[in-house]
Length: 359
Image (cartoon, rainbow, N blue to C red; front, side, top):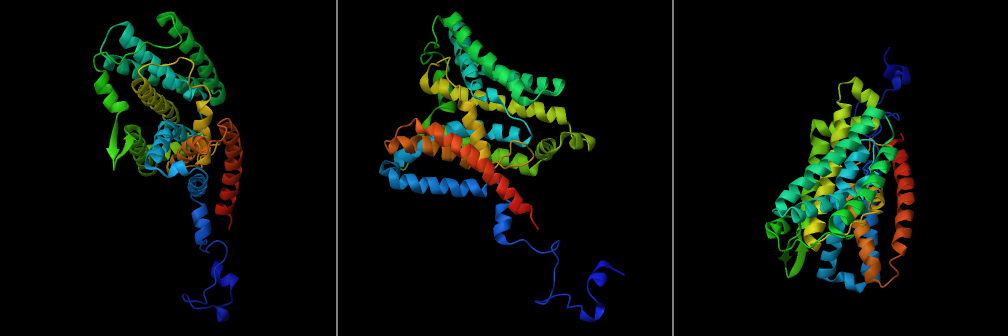
């Protein structure tokens, strides 16, 4: 006798279809609300909209097109780094060196070009090689030693922080690099990494377009490719992933190298936007990147998350950074907001997962 027959006597069996059909907890369709809650990005999208409305009311200056363009620019400089950091977190790891890595990349490009009197594109390529090498080193050390990514990247963070300052002072005699705005190739590089264009009379930075383009590519990779499946698999359970043939070591190393690529791009933008680099910058930015990814629905434990969520997470942090200024509040409160949002988002994500998986 079948399971259905055991559960319901034959004489009382309702029609196979229609309003009288009974379903048990295993076959009931979840409500629309629960299905929406199952999406990691829903919470941050609603939160970002709420914060936007709040600051539009509290800071009238934000209603101007130029102010919103500045918010998008600030969000893009955060968001470009948040994208690979989010992918890495979905893969079960995180990178504490992501804050100072863009500075190391910019310093490499600037000093290589200026001190050796080369075209700035040589410095750009050298910086890419260094950034990818840093990412490779983090990933390789992680998979070879089995150490937690916290310890591996904390060591890299401290090492880069010291190298950035010491090498810059040794080479330039100062804590900042020399101005490279009059060197060969500068204008072409600036057009790629730090130019702007007008939209309806509003000046928009090209980093906004790069940010959205990178987000679109990352979303496609995560949801439509075998590599995206590998990221979720190694973040969920690397041993199980390895047992079914997922190249765990390659996936983790390549994710750290993607963070290196993001650091290179942000570093190049900073260099060609300001023409010089301060060697002590970047400390603390890693917390903003990680927090934006967590607020966007990525779990610190890995195996869960999207790209759309971190995009809105970056937008929220960029909005708050400038919204506080436009509202003429004390900007020191931003760090308080960062801490509250990080803890709050973690609790909300935990609750959402429980709601989404309940029967």
